[in-house]
Image 1 (cartoon, rainbow over the protein chains, first blue to last red):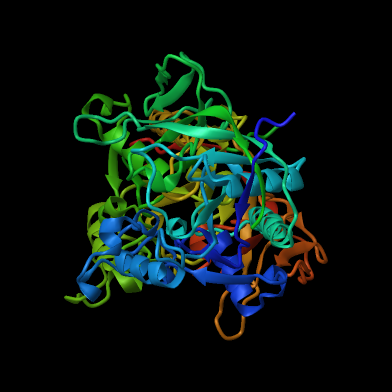
Image 2 (cartoon, rainbow over the protein chains, first blue to last red):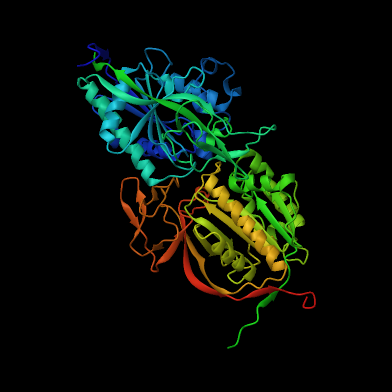
Length: 313
Length: 319
């Protein structure tokens, strides 16, 4: 028996964007978007406007994460309403432009769905990133993608944490969807990673197509990993890192980390253990871009979210 | 039965270990910083003095490969001795500083041995990269590491470049090699990679101590991979953007034998591009991030067995 008899109605998703190059050195998204800007046959769906778009062209050109500041943290209300024109940091200017084109964030004119394509040096496999546990449309989409991709794994990371949540490029849309595939070094294009991202995006577009044609999706549950806290590297008095992710933890994204388990290894070989009070599920383990953000990994807990049935209004 | 006399070689009095020649290759950066800590600067027990330094501190500070130009291509005689100029790229200025400190290249004052620490995104395990296939010091150190670290995949790569044209930091010393370990993403340190580098450097130091104190090192065979050519990605004629990625059947298979007709690349529309050469060669530096801009998707080598003679330090009378 279903635990929610109400079918949530959403407008057809007519305007969809696919963002690549939000970080200029995350190559799967850059390559896919460039490909589709040249030839969009693969991503076309009836009744749907799908716009592939390079969000940070200067960073892509230099093959760096960002030029002045991280674009994927730049979509704060403060930045979006800042004055200063071309005195502003490059990525703040870009955020304002993207907000004009695909937003405004929070308004009725905003794009229905934005897929933001990312890679990570962490061994996260295929991960969908959800920003709200209440977005039934996104939950149903993620449920669909997971089932279509099975038996291969596609997990869902929920970042709703009031302090750790950040203002992403995709957040200008009504339904923002992050797609993170790893492990892949920055600046490198790996065939298997590229193909995996291509497939999960295909499933996502199929879902939207089916939804727009009037298919009703019954109530479902989705397992998610909810972000709990950021764990930094141990540092000395001068702020220098004094240990690395422990070999027992390296590449073990999504596996349980129990109190007392090895967590870091100092440069002279000593083990530092996890001191938390309960088992957590770490992810974003050893992401290169996060050394400067004081993050060795994030902890998560497993939750099952319920989504109501959905149908086009 | 005649036993060959070991080859006599001069003592290695001054040894340098360099990290951060590329500022985002972090195992070497963290290892050199660790080795520079006061509590770690113990005496080896041997007569060698050990210099440890970060080659490109500005690039290290920015966690980038280089600031203006690749430091590890700046050590040709021509670049080192070229005209001094105000607006010279930072790395050329720094290369000349390093040449003063560790060289001058080609002179009697140069350090005896340079070990330059690098990481690669390619799945190469631990590699020595040297300009010579008959530098018995480097080859013996390699043999020593093979014996001491049997679980670590280890190869000796030879770039057949003349002394005149040699361009990397390790070419400043009388003997020198790069210790290249992967796979590790740039900007990241992986504990297993760091540990392999730390152990490799320690074994090298032990070997040098032993050599200087008169140990005889028995000769034997070493497989040497001599670089033959590089292969670039297929690229779009106009934009020069790549149009294919390393084929999934080749990705991560460094030092496999690539035969004519075998898969090399997979285009973005799914076609396989095959290796068109006449000769089966060994692939390495498969999908190294920093080489996209140098037009290198992978490098190809021939393998041959080199017989390394026994060696022994020259005694004072012999020098």
